[in-house]
Length: 120
Image (cartoon, rainbow, N blue to C red; front, top):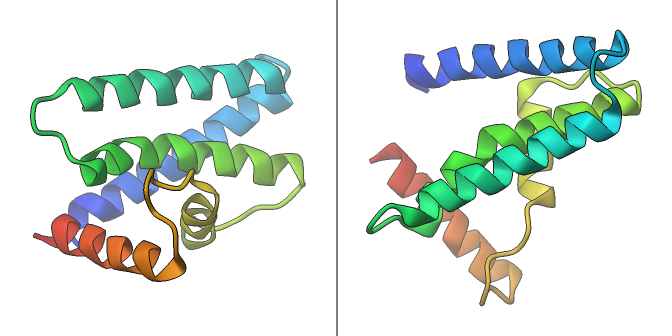
């Protein structure tokens, strides 16, 4: 993993803790935090889709950090402290299926394609 990815991992961990602290201290309710993350997901998705030539992989890449923070919030509500790798697994398991993807084999093929494009 390159150092930029590690830096983003650290940043996302701090942001997740910050959001959890804001909720715990009553500065943001759970509903407000859900709304904030949903708005961020919508805005980021619209922005990514508006870029000429943006691929589905690029859209998923843009939405990943927001979805990770959503999973971190859900885990905190269950009184769980999950590491980055556990949160990324949950993001992958809980993301909406891509239109037109029917079988696990197709999903796996898309995951392999996503990895290749990301690592390129």
